[in-house]
Length: 245
Image 1 (cartoon, rainbow, N blue to C red):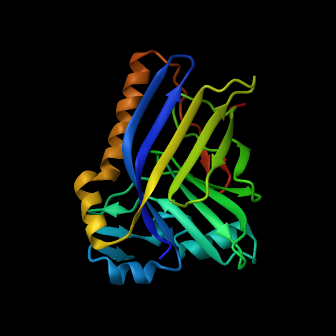
Image 2: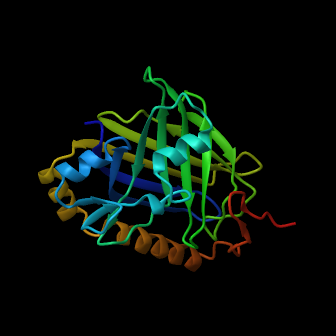
């Protein structure tokens, strides 16, 4: 089975205009999207597109259609036959994913592209197709994510292949070339069994709720440090946040 659990840490380091660094333990799912029916059969707490202790729902991603179909359609690449998704699942009906990552492979196992599905706490989401096989990508910021950053920035990504370990790094780049923020997700693989899933749920109870709570806690810390605040701009589905004139 290609699907697995990854246990590790998430680190954010803000350099300007005020320093703010944190590191938290996290758990993530790596899903081979062809294995979803098998996961539901093998893992007692897991449900696909129906309520359960732990659940995966297509409706939580893209336009609500089957996620693999949505990724292939978005990438517009008929050579893609396998998609691996790094994400969090619903626990007791709740989930919030600031970003989900997708590795897209052809029939020979070569990486065709990646997709970064970005979401913010305002219920807005925008996927970005990251073209090429080299695991390093960049694009202009198109979605308002944090009220403590504007839209005039770029994202630089660096990934590993999901093996015994997985790593995803995002650097935020200002117009002057400076790097005000780096975020790094790192995890070690655990085989997906009922016992491993139970240990993960005991170690990381209500992980999705923890994610949203920590986002707001860090926002409060930045506000107390008087980091400049950016109001949320209008959002156009499929296009992103509207840049100020």
